[in-house]
Amino acid sequence: MELLTYCTILLVCSLLLKLLKGKFSPSLPLPPGPNGYPIIGNLLDMPTVMPWKTFQKWSNVYGDVMLLRLPGNPIVILGSTQATFDLLDKRSDIYSDRPTSVMQKMMFWDWAMSLMPYTQTWREHRREFHQYFYQRKVPTYHPVQLAQCRAGLQRLLASPTENVGQNIRQIFTAIILKVTYNLDITDLRDEYVVMAQKALEGVSLGTVPGKFWVEFFPILRHIPSWVPGNSAGKMADHYKPIVEFMRNKPFDEIKQGMMNGNVVPSIASSLIERVYKKSGEDYSTPIDDTLARNVAGIAYAGSSDTTTSAAQSCLIAMSLYPEVQRKAQEELDRVVGPNRLPDFDDHEDLVYLRAIVLEAMRWMVVLPLCIPHRVIRDDEYKGCLIPKGTIVMPNIWLAV
Ligand code: HEM
Image (tube, rainbow, N blue to C red; front, side, top):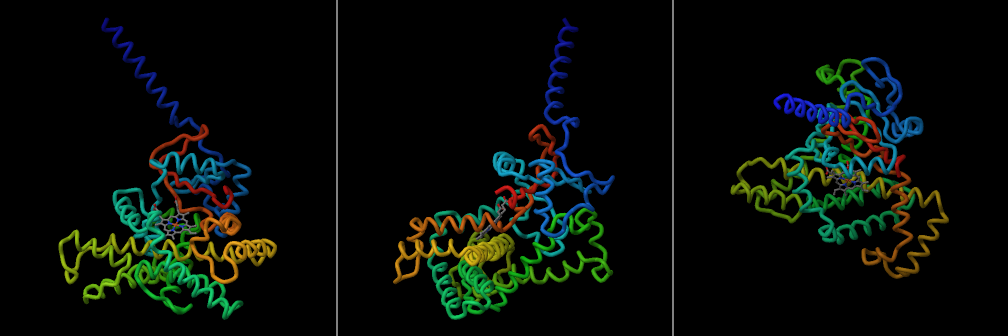
């Protein structure tokens, strides 16, 4: 009897082991990808300019789940909408983490919620952010959006060929600065417009996958920036004060105003009020306002460049495809008429225009490689093992 029990336990255990092994066996193949070199893997193959184009070529060869071997964690590039949806959406419980980046830290971008790991701190930021940007809240910002768009149109009318791109940038940066910090932007060269543009230029240049070896060998960050060839150090020195300015300057101004008894309503002032209310202190007492500062900062940082870029793509599309522009004008004339400007009430009826906006965002996708995700445990997809810690990047440029 004892022997029978022993044998049964042994059988069950071995079956369980077999099942588990079958699920995430080291013998499961890794996704295919370009051959690399020993130790450094694909490090030397990594494209540094428009990497999404090279990834597209590779995906055509290796398929829509492709692995790049790099020192530290491998990178999986997703080359189809289906694979992106299957992993990042359907399995978001394990794919919502973010890789930590040495360059982001060196450039002072590690406070940004969009780059934070999937932790309690991120959840708190997200909850706070959501208070001000859930879908039904957004219409409260329509008056600001309309006012800034119309001011921008006046500027374009007065000067249709000069500074068009910067003019568009002013519209979108002015909108987010007004709702977040109640700041009024009246000039193309306003420091808040220019500094946000530069700070975001920094994050996009500094986070090209594979560009900076310091990501794979973090010890390199201790090399002084004056050492010839230390492009990572030089870049960090250049951008860090700009990013600090962007996150702190408008917030500090609002806070100072509140300390002086001057509370102008805005997202930042509401965030500050909430922090102080929670602490029970008054505005003259210094308290930890990191969460409020970060949430206001990410609204400013997350929106100014993305929305500008999407609107600029629409304008480029209109100049390249005049027949599409003509049809859009016909729709505007029919729906809105000649005596007023369109507003949000016309949105539903401007079917063709809405399609143009969506198509422009597909055509010149704003963040072609999204913001990298990281899987928090071993996973299996299409018969391949995606090991814990793998960085996962959907190639949106190819997938749409
Ligand atoms: C055309 C406009 C925009 C585009 C194309 C865009 C694109 C993106 C993308 C691709 C992500 C990463 C999603 C992911 O990794 O799963 C993201 C995240 C984020 N975006 Fe945007 N975005 C736009 C506008 C905005 C605006 C207006 C705001 C703020 C008001 C904003 C704030 C954020 C934040 C806070 C995150 C991080 C979300 C999180 O960590 O959960 N974005 N955006």
